Length: 441
Image (cartoon, rainbow, N blue to C red; front, top):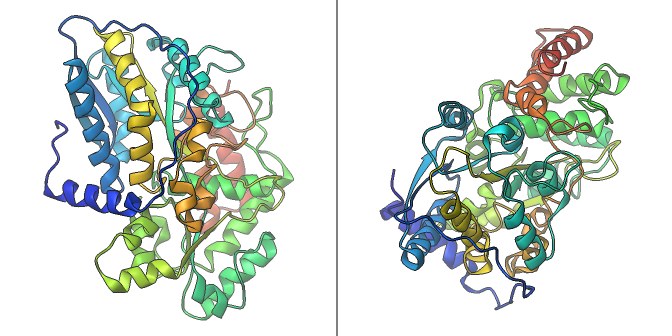
């Protein structure tokens, strides 16, 4: 579909801009460095493929920025928005047929899965890094070829999943906030269920949410998919402890989480069915910008916090990362790169960041100074979403195998089999190792 803003998007854009309207003016620190010379091809037209919105301003402001690009360059741009679960198939079709989008904005490891079908964007990435204070580590992991300075894709933002909870209900359960100890966190979840406000974490095939929870279970217990050399490292006591913990956690949850989609935890939290989950800023955004006073009151009772660290030295969470890629098959590579550069410049990027209350947290450090991050203390936990050592395929090389394991739900299914009682921990672990070895050879 073309980037035309309808009534619903206009309302979402207005709400997003209203949320940021009172923000004090704060200039993004920008270095004076020359931009790469990119002469768009005569008569160039671009088609962009990217994930659909979870909050209205994501698309609305993205469309607005795209129209500005067309006004300034004369290059017509069509944007196709795709539901998250359908993105892997759509990206694969585009790359494998050599047809379709000129700019593909995919997830995480996509640039590594299709590395041989991409044009490098090193010139663009080096310019943006020099201009905006450098890239966060997670951006380098997903953007650069492993242990190389060559850039395969351009990270555009990441959404993470800290704990989202009702402050009053957590207090009623006997806690002042989210404990950092895994045993205490389990006790909190048990108490929430006892008082009728259970938690909810999916181990279904819900994009973003389920992998976030599964990864947290593994990393918080000191486990990892592979070691630094890329050898499968799941067969470890840490993984078995994580599996036991997942089974205990499942007993504290609201029924039905095994069938949740990517929006189910949002709806359950907003509907008052659960008191604790993991999520991006979309739940809080929806409540804060609502015209319903009851939802505004719920926003006031909503808090965010890092998930318990457990055995990890830092919050054991990664960010689902958008990565802009330029396929070799495009007839307009310079126009495609010019579009990506334009969308990452402060005049466009900061309104997109601010309008979504930081839903897609910045990959470039200078945007950490955006006024959005000091506008509301409840957003602070999202500010450094991409400043993390954790990523898909941790702790080994980011490779097509890492992406394939994630896209085929290997870790999620490993925990789900145990949480549902379908398999014992040792048996489910062996099945996950067999599945991972299909790609790690």
